[in-house]
Amino acid sequence: MVTREEIKVKLKRNVIKNRFIHSINVMELAAELASVYGVDQEKAAIAGLLHDCAKNIELDRMLMLCDEFDIVVDDVERLQPKLLHGRVGAVLASKEYGIYDETILNAIRYHTLGRENMTMMEKIVFVSDYIEPNREFEGIEEVRELAFIDIDKTMIISLNNIIVHIIAKGALVHPVAIMARNDMIKKRM
Ligand SMILES: [Fe+2]
Ligand SMILES: [Fe+2]
Image 1 (cartoon, rainbow, N blue to C red):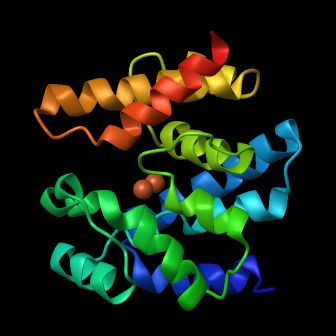
Image 2: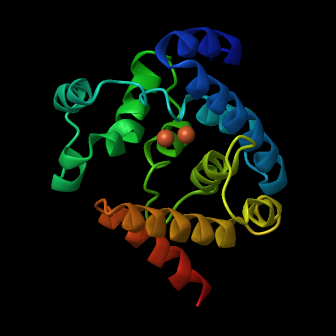
């Protein structure tokens, strides 16, 4: 298996500086949460490190890559191609970084919108992305504490905040984010 150090060297060339720092932060937090929730720490770390590996790809190239990788793009994604960086990132993680573990690839694939029936690995990367040390939003300290106690509740709060934020901006809400949110809530009812 490729080492984290090898991945870092490559990633540094493919993303801007702030994105690289963010990736390291997500990697570290994901590893910590993995130990709390009993999933493979190394895999969580690699998923955290690579989750945004496609984030700095030009948007027209993102759509070209979707074509090349047979990723079916829906209307919301076509209008907001940034949403595709998780799915494109998962393909690049295997093609360019040599990662073939599906649990890692799915955590990368679903870190932007979530999905129904998320695995623990997927939740950990999703949450780590949202609350890593460089993030700032009202009430983040409480969410950071909660992440180590109740990851599902943390997921719901994160998805709620993200959806509200998208609505406030006037952008399109992807239905999969709503489905992910409702799924998490249903399971607690
Ligand atoms: Fe991302
Ligand atoms: Fe991210």
